[in-house]
Image 1 (cartoon, rainbow over the protein chains, first blue to last red):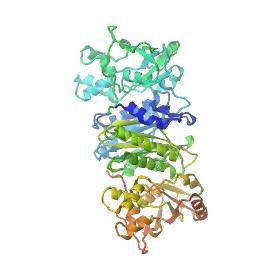
Image 2 (cartoon, rainbow over the protein chains, first blue to last red; image 1 turned 30 degrees about the horizontal axis):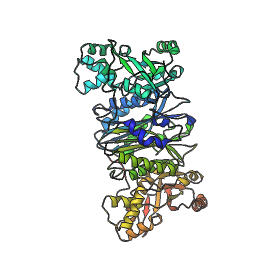
Image 3 (cartoon, rainbow over the protein chains, first blue to last red; image 1 turned 180 degrees about the vertical axis):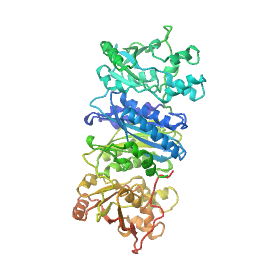
Image 4 (cartoon, rainbow over the protein chains, first blue to last red; image 1 turned 30 degrees about the vertical axis):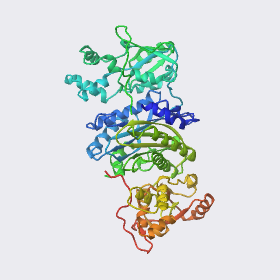
Length: 319
Length: 319
């Protein structure tokens, strides 16, 4: 059973009559009356990160993953909590020093503060991160409109190649390996764009599970379909290189998530404002498709104008 | 290394200049400007609960443990989040149904709502619960004054006996076993007393680690000592019975925590108001000792007026 099915089936009824809950169908909780936005995620060794050989990089990455949930909704993260479960090796003095140093850098970069948490003993290493922000409004899921353009920020797919290299499933030159591993551990968050989203986006999500999986989550309660042009999905020059070498397919690299770029839809009338903001902030924003009626089937069109059928739409926490 | 030492040494500096953080030295986080109070705790199978044979009871207990952190600070919990890590057996349909039913009862009892969380795959079962409340003020730790009386609500020690029975370390009659097991799984929370605390308590904490351990945490940054009269520490008639049978010592039963009663100090001038509130609400509140100057050594005086030396002051998460 997949994560959101579990949540939906057994727990959504516990939130009935609670207007703040978003019916457990968003990545953040929003209490409008208190202007409070909360995101909680758990990261388990072996599932959400490979191992803990580089504790500073792992902690940096999962913290970014957590605050990304707020940033993609137009909310500035203000503080965070970390609960760590692990053994004495995971929380050795050396590791704690590295973790602390890494968190300090992230705090400076994103103007956030650690406000609590706990450490408990467990043979299995995991972290739960709670990120908190305050906002009058958020950009919800399931607010796409027919004919909306679909946009994505930055470049997709690099992080997945980094993961494959770290898993020793792909071997590249040292330079390329360094590039992709860095992209895996240092996802770029579009914090500067966050507050601007209100001026053009109808609905938004961050890409953590993969472009297609997150697009489907974004509109999962709407009677809509989408059309994505793979050619328009932005990828880095380095990723283009290894696609050319047939080491990986473009559709696979962008469907596996961990990108933390913002996926949003906007009315076509917003094209100019999006283009202007993109230029002003120096943030790449690419139009990659369109929201269509429910009568059509969702489509991904490849470089040769052929429809792609995806076997695996992205990452999900299967039980 | 113990939990609070880890937190203190490596992470307190990450919260410098953040007036809201309580320097990671309280069980809750309080953002005064936003009137927001948050408590986050992680519960691991084998450490914080024995096993998951009774998922409904385990979830009930850990939820109460979480909201207890707010209640003992004078804050009414409003909503909560649960993140569960486990395998498909832990999150089987049957278990999810039991968990959901149990949470529903707790929600009704404490007027709280589930607002989010996630479920991730892990071979090790654990839960992180985040409880949220709103308040203009909280009762802090480390605000005891010399000559304050020390009080505790309810009865202590029953839960620990229940744990020993479940661990098969103590064997009692079926009736007594049922009584203590129930006390272990159903800690009584003094939710009704919570808001009244502001009218008399200088400082407060809930007893999760044990009477002495939590008392020492309550005043850990103050140059103070305490004097506790074991005779005055309230215990149930059933616990009295098995102490008489020499199955357990009183000092051991009340030093092992999991009671979730409120431990607080108050100026002697508050005696009458405490007594009145106790009667009005029908909540047992017992004076068990006194806060003394730093020049004295902390003392626990037993039934025969002798000083007790404790080897183990209570539960702590050792690494």
